[in-house]
Image: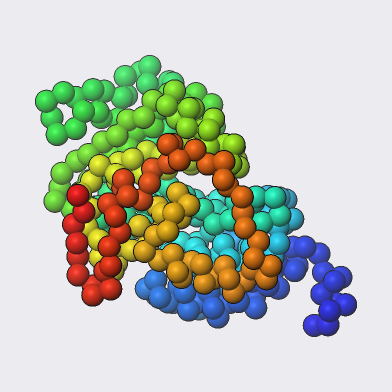
Length: 294
C-alpha cells in the first residue's frame, strides 16, 4: 500500500492495518505467556481491541502506535484488552492510548499462577446493604460475609454503591475478606481522577480493582517465574518498575516513534497501592526459585 493510499484510510482503518501488521509479534508474546494457540488468539486480541474502538471514539482518535503498544503489553501478560471481558483496557490520555489492567485481569493472573484459588470483588449496592446481605462475623477466620443479589443491575450497583467486598480463598484453604466503604473509594477517586480517566469511564471496575489489590496486599504471596505477570500488572498499574519492566519498555521503544511520554505526574503517591506494599521489594528470580516476601 502506497503512502497516498494510507493517507486515504480512516483512523479506524489505519489502526486496523497497524494491528494486522503486528499479528505475528502479538502471537509470539501470547506464546510466551503460555496460553495455547497463540496464532488464533492474536487475531482475537486484535478483534477485541477493534471492538473497543467502535465503542469509544476517543480511542479511534489515538495514535495507532499507542494502540499497538497497549495490545502488545496486554499480550505479554496474557490478557486481552476490551470492555467486554474486562481483563484489560486501553485508556485514552489525549491522543495516546495506555494499557491498564482490569480487576478481572488481576483475578485471572492471581489464579493462573496459583497465588490464590479464588478471588472475587463485588461492588455492593445500597439495596443489598440495607437488606442485610453484608454481615459482620466476629470470632471467625473472616470478619464479613456477603450474599449478592443477582437481580440487581450493574447500573444500580454503580449508582448506589456503599462499598466493595472482596473475598480471597488461598491455596491452603484459608479465607480472607476485605471491605472498603464508599467514602474511602470516593476519596481515592477524587484524587485519582485528576490523572486517570479510567476512574471516570470505568468507575465500578476501578472500585473493584481497588478491593482486589488491597486484598492481595494482605497476603503472604510467593514470587516465582509463573507469578511475574501478576506483579508486573500491579507495578504497571501503579506506574512503577516491576519484574517485567524491561519487556514493557522495549515494546514502547519499538513502537513509539517520537518517544511520547504520558504525563501522569499529578498522581498522588499516598493513594497508590505500591508494588512494595503488595509483594515486597521485587527480587531477582532469574534462577526460577521461589522467594517469600515479608
